Each structure stands twice: as C-alpha cells, then as structure tokens.
Amino acid sequence: MMKKWIVASLLAVGATQAAALCISPVCTCSVSATSIAFGSYNPLGGALQDANGSVTFSCSGAAGLLIPYSIAINAGSGTMTGRLMKNGTRNLAYNIYSNSNYSTIWGDGTSGAPTISGTIVLNVLGTLSLTSTMYGRIAAGQNTLVPGTYQDTLTVTVTYD
Image (cartoon, rainbow, N blue to C red):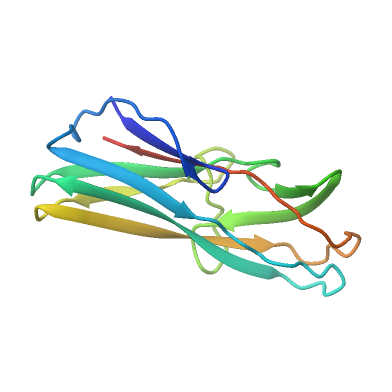
C-alpha cells in the first residue's frame, strides 16, 4: 500500500493511506507547500510573468530506509497543458513547470505532463527533507483581460511507500 498526502488549493494538507515501507513509528513523512503568488498582472504589458512556489516532502525514521515518492499536480480549472486562473467568467492562462527553463509542465502523469519522482534514503536518525520548486508562468499577450484577482485551486499529491 502507498501513503498519499494531498495538498489542495496550493495548499492545505489532506488524506493518508497505510504504507508498506514507511510504517510508523519506524518512519513518518509529511508534506507542506507554499503558494505561487504572481501578484498583479498588467494585461497591457503583454509580457510573460513568472513566480515560484515549492513543495517540501520530509521523512524521518531508521537509517538505510529507502522511500520512493512521486509528486503530482492536477490540472486545476483548465487542462494539464492549459491551466487557467479565473475571475468570474474571465480566464488567465498560466502553467506550472518542474524546471527553471519552463520546458516541462509539472502534472499528474497524464497528457504529457509528468510527475516528479525519486527516492529518499534515510541515512541518519532524524529528518530528511526534499524541496521541489514549482515554476509558475503566466502566458504573454493576454491583453483583453481586465484588472482583478485571478485564482485557481490545484491539488498537489505526494505518494510514497
């Protein structure tokens, strides 16, 4: 079985399931996230707008324990390749990327948008943390939008054994 932590709306902690390798009290894991805050968008500026957030996955337990993990982000209000922030009926196009050159959309493993995955090896008694940066980008050229607050709610899911 796998444990899952769900962080919603960029980002409040949610549900769990039982685990195979990471069994309390031998191992405990947690997840936290910081929101991506783009700030004010100037539709007349016509430029890309970037902002970052992060997901931190932490585990503690017995030395030598190998914990595979996967971090997924859902599509929110749009699609995996075209996420949307909303203000009433108005849509502001943006996306979340797993790399700083904005070439790989961070998704849930569908529609060509991979998750981030890897392993944590606990090498000491204590806590080991892994922080992954979420690179957010608002698409350029959205000059028909009106000023206002645009929002989207995403769910970040961390699955680990």
